Length: 286
Image 1 (cartoon, rainbow, N blue to C red):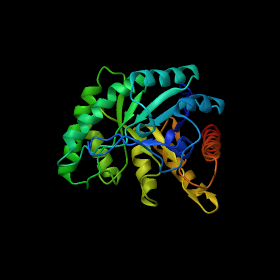
Image 2: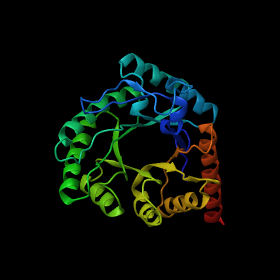
Image 3: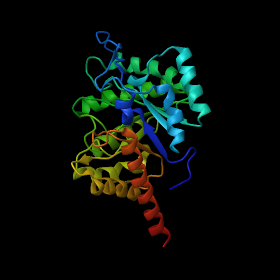
């Protein structure tokens, strides 16, 4: 594992969605409202306080879901950016949570809406902006449409210091075949955020081994059952990252009701990965 600026762990605000409470439905569909809703309860903390909360737990990278931003006003974006800087927390990725560049009817509308988030990501100091590659079935036509629009989006981000990345997510990218095709077609203009939990086992393990060597960042999501964290699955996913030569940071994705306090799940996953990395390093140097 290489030494990374601000350490090798990040947290996504999705891992804290119960703590944060309200979500804001920003969308390219004008019929949808961005007014706050509380599908996970009222919450107990504000986004602006999360950089300090992370730093207090020894984590210095943050990813923010677009629907957790309570305001897109320049003053608020500046305030959040300042909170990151004062806590020495790196804004790793702004996660844009709507839009479909593969849709035959709305792709152009959606990708132009996605482009509006580039300036928001830049104002926040985000290194990357993760967008949805596509939600349609992986036909050649849909894949080509997504590639064309994502290439255009990457061009809009040039000069902004924000890199566009996509994820192995939704119907368009069900396997390494489609994922690799899309990345090859984009020829380095768009990066990969590899997610450990989006594909289903057992096929996902070889799939991760295939794509994680191309990943710049990783959503290290763990599965939970009645007994807690599925250690066997998590270890296999991390082994595939190791096999692929993945050397980037791990974003801790906790998405389970197993712990009442989401921080408990986040820190358990952090400890699991730390133990795995120490063991892997020991085996490499033995």
